[in-house]
Image (cartoon, rainbow, N blue to C red; front, side):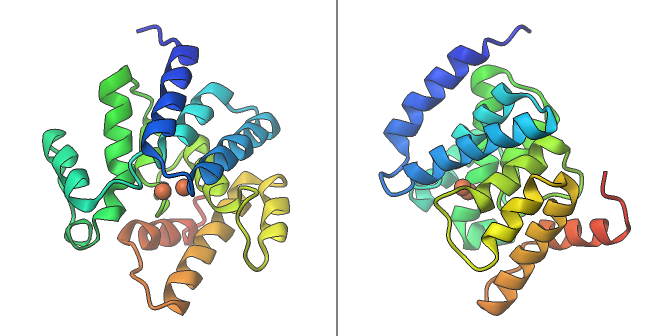
Length: 195
Ligand SMILES: [Fe+2]
Ligand SMILES: [Fe+2]
């Protein structure tokens, strides 16, 4: 099926306006901007990355019960952790929404959106770029972020390893859950398979 990316981007921009909180909008547009820069640097599809950036946190501000309702309608299976922390399924819901609403079937896009918080062992370049942009967009402020931004434009795979390392360090240092996909990703990366 021929997809009209311009129409999809226009519709998603309207939905971001309606569904994303005022506080989060600068983050979402920061991710769009960072994704566009990464697309240029690594010759990735800018339209696909823009769509991923616009949709990735579209459901992030919905209350848990609403997220569960949508997930139920979409017949998504929710992990035990997702039941405890509904916010964790916002990526999964966004990915399924994009698939159903626009007929997008690009696996790199869909898994990239679904697992943008955790990382994923079999991400392609689009998924890696979204994870980087989500962590490094210009409104974010934390230790070492400028160094990580530099690495992001030096080597996509090296930067992805560093971002996953950061996520693990952050979770451990702040007494937070380690997401199973993050651990699986780390283990896969340590096998030396960074393609
Ligand atoms: Fe998110
Ligand atoms: Fe985000």
